[in-house]
Amino acid sequence: MTKMPAKSTKATKVAKPAKTNRPPAAPPSGEQLMRDMKKALGKQTFANIAEVNAFMQNLMGSGGQPLGEPGGPESLKDEAQDLAFEAMEAATAAQARSLAKQAVEKHPGIDAMGVLRAGLDAGSAQAASEGLQQAVEAGERSLGAKFIKKNKGHFWLILETRPYMRALEHLAGTYRAEDLNKDAINVYEKMLELNPNDNQGVRDSLLGLYLAIGATGEAGKLLEAYKDDSMANFAWARVLQRFLSHDLPGAAAALTIARKQNRFVELFLSGQKKLPRHMPASYSPGSEEEAILCLDNLAVAWGNFKPASLWLMDQLMKEAAPKNAPAAKLMMVPSKPGKKRNDQ
Image (tube, rainbow, N blue to C red; front, side, top):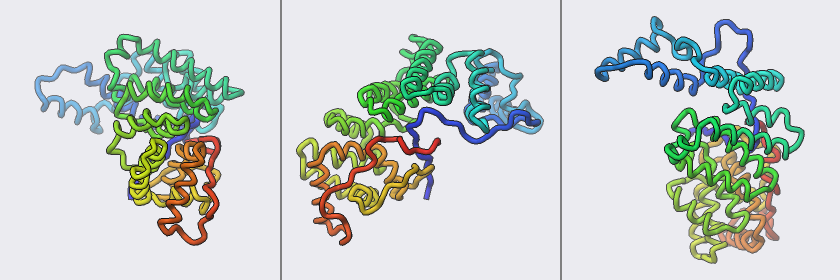
């Protein structure tokens, strides 16, 4: 069964290591390859597809010019982005901070600006959110209003937009972790306007926030917009949305589907299983790990509406839940999303 990477609401990611004094250089990341391929192709003129294929074969072959080294970075922005890629793979926080600082000094509108420096250097959540807001503003200046307007709806597929979209995601995650729900909602909504394809998967967090504040209309529109989403988060969110919309038959029907999608969710909601202290790094559809991630988005929403929780417990008992299930009420956890996550 396919394993999928888990999402994180933390504002910083320092992943595993790329040594700084290594000969030869580490292979370029996927985004570096895509950027360098675009750059290499942009210099060529082709008469037909055969010439394109021949050029690409030569470029990627052992005798060709390796991708990732198409003559070296051609601008300060490229040099800064390369440093940002290294920073995100640094072995230590000190290395990440140093590389991020160098990247920012070369060009302000890249990943390292807010994502790394805000997370590593901020002494408080407010300082982190302020740093990330600066990253967002820098990204908007770098892209330009004309570019944003022209490409709205197609972000993320355009490489130049990704640092900006990452900064938005980390900013929203910081707001969400501090219970600034409306601020987080505004950022997530903006992200989906820019990139309805939602490559970053922010619709799950947005749906949980809509339900947490009782915005059932907005939640319903989001459920409809992504009606083909078959993961546990949407299935269990639909149950609560129907209940809060006073559609009990609809809620009961949605519950039947949700339980088939992932039965582990009800075990955590009813207190039959305890949530772990740390979030899983990956998950498979229908797994316990998926249920944990689902509740990271939805537990607060369920906990905010006691009648919904009591109705759910009653439904679970009617459906012959295990005999040792607590019969009093749901035990809703965690109280704040993202607080006990591991860095992803």
